[in-house]
Amino acid sequence: MVSYDKLIDELAHDIREKKIIPFVGAGLSRNLGLPEWESLMAKVAEDLDIDPDILALHGDFLQINEYHIICHGGSKNRISKIIDRNLRSIEVDIAASRVHKCLIDMNFPKIYTTNFDEMIEMAFRCHNVPHYPIATLDDIMNAPDNVTQIVKFHGTLDLDETLVISETDYHNRMDMEEPLDIKLRADLLGKTVLFLGYSFRDLNIRYMWSKLFKIMQANCKAYMVTMRPNYVFETVYGKKGMKIICLDSDDFSADFTRFMTDLRDRVLG
Image (cartoon, rainbow, N blue to C red; front, side, top):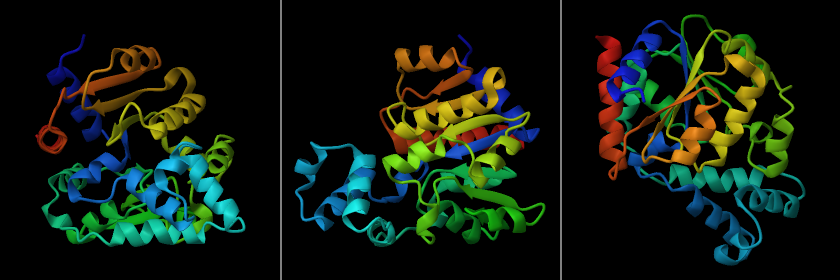
C-alpha cells in the first residue's frame, strides 16, 4: 500500500504540473454551516404538504425532487427557489474558511463542482482572485483566458434549465452529449481527477465516476479523499484507477482542513 506522504507528494507534484482537475462536493463547505441535503429535501417535502419522513419511505432524493417537479407542471422553478432560499438563509464567513483559501492558493486552471451553492465563487470574490463561472454553452464560448473556470457541472440555481436535480436529469446526463459533457471530455485529456468533499456513499461520486470511466476508459485516473476506510469501496474503485487518500478521521472539519493545508503547502513548496 502506498503511504499517505507518498500519495500527497505525488498529488502535489501533479497539481504543480497543472495535471489535476478537482471535482468539489458538498463536504468542502461543510464547516460553513450550510444546511445538509437531507434538511433541504425536508423543505421540499413540506412544500408538498407531506411529512418528510413519510415521503422518504417512498423514494430517494432524486425521485422526491422529480415528484415535486411533476406536481408543479414540470417546472423546476419552485424547487430551485426552495433550495436557494435555504442556502442563502445562512450567514457565512467565507473569509474564515481555510479549505476554500487553500483551494484558491493551489491555482487550479479549472474547478468542477456539483454543488448548487456559490461558496467557491464567494471565496474567489472575497480574496479578489479572478474567476469565471460556467454553466451554459454561452459561458463556455465567452470564458476569458488565464482565469480559473468554475464549472457548475450540475447547473446553477440562477438558471432552472441547467439543474441536474432529478432522476431523469441524471439519466439524461449519462448520454454525455450536453455542452458541459463535451467540455469535460476535452478538459480531461491527459489529466487526473481529484475528488474533494464527497463520501463513498454519495450517489454523486458513483455517478461521476461512471461518467468519467466511460469517457477515459483505460486512462481513467483519479484521487479521492475519504474520511473513513472502506475496503469494499477501495477494492472496487481501486481496480478502476482511483487512488484513495484516507484521513481515517473522527473530526471531519479539523482533519479535512489539516489535509487541505498540508496539500497546499506541498504544492507551494
